[in-house]
Image (cartoon, rainbow, N blue to C red):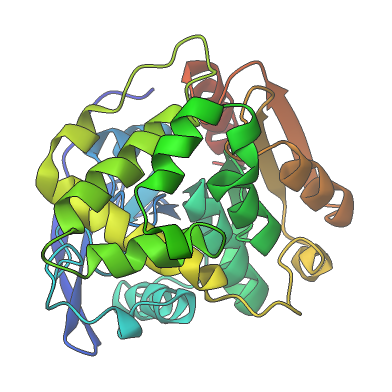
Length: 310
């Protein structure tokens, strides 16, 4: 990774519905614009995300999506209205930020959920995207959500039973993300539900030999924000129309160069999505790494891609 840097500009942007999103810019003010699209939903982005691009060549934009990180109001607060936090809202927020920073076109770098949001943004605003670099690739498809909340339990049966049994008996055969979202809205059950959800998040990424439990999940405030946003999005199919599959519509990215980096050991988001996306997008390159849902070799390939595109 490139050396640590500090932002030279930052602020809060009002995006409507009572929401303000945090943004910052680092690197070269005259450099090639690139925007970091973090995962989660709700994981925000750390200072390390500034280190994926050459700061002498890039104008690096980082922002926190609605409801998380430094953006306000925080989704972890029970009174925060999540009805105005959807994929379309986030796409609109990105456009408002691009216009606010007077950027004509920018490179998108997204991880996990950030790759889903990047794909959705790029398919809607193709003329605003110079390149896409996506790693730990997901596309928000309903079969991906069903896999990660239910089917992958075949690999982790004990952990999955704990995850399933944390919801009421009558909800265990239905939409588990929706069941958790309901528990997270109840003052009596929200803390235990957030803990159970994040325990499952740590479980299904644990096949990577370099796996370590996420220290972020030890923070009850982060845990609540993350769990509320993830369950909100997954319970609603990531707010993507079923007939508008981002993988099937990858032909809309024709003319946009792309690099997809994915882990062979990623059971949270199986390679299938990145593979099918690559086949449907002629301008993409797929790099498969012997890692899970993220890792040092994956980051090295991402940095190589940003270096190539600079």
